Image 1 (cartoon, helix red, strand yellow):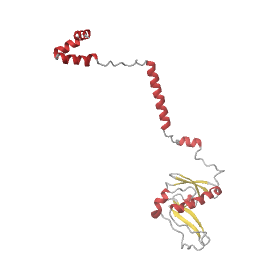
Image 2 (cartoon, helix red, strand yellow):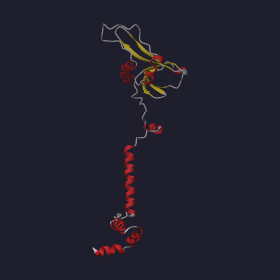
Image 3 (tube, one colour):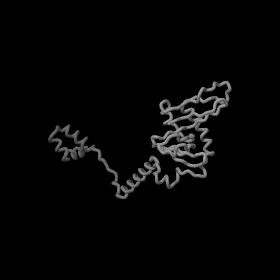
Image 4 (cartoon, helix red, strand yellow):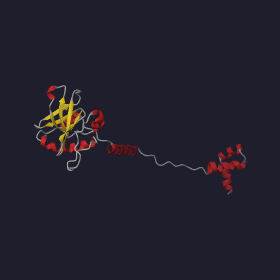
Length: 218
């Protein structure tokens, strides 16, 4: 014990503390700050090869995360043309084939426009005085959001006179065009950008007492 005290008093740090503090305070500071000071050991430094492996693993994980969460890119116009994604086969574009689609569209448009269809099966149902008229001012917003695939359409007014009278079922409804299949199984494309174009869509009302068409002029 005595030797420990002698070593403590001989330590240069204890001598410096004794010059500035009392003996008791100097001993306390020497014990807490010098003798009991923790020695922080750093692990072995990684080698350059380990650093390269760590960076490579980080890149691989980052790439894997990116590929997992990225959204698929849309096809370009060139890729669509080369793949024939929107190409219509003339052998399959038959008016008779799309007639069934037109019947489905008729049921769909009645619901979209919220118009009550005459009841074919109920003989006691009241006979409508006339077929309901649909116009842009009353039903414009519903028509703008409707899907026209399967609609039977006829061009009744257009800037290009030779286009007037074309009638067919819509097989493609795009942002700027309607593609029709006519009764002669011909494919016709109508441009919606023509401000003078007027289209009339027919939703046939097959009723034993009333026959006609729901004309939608847009």
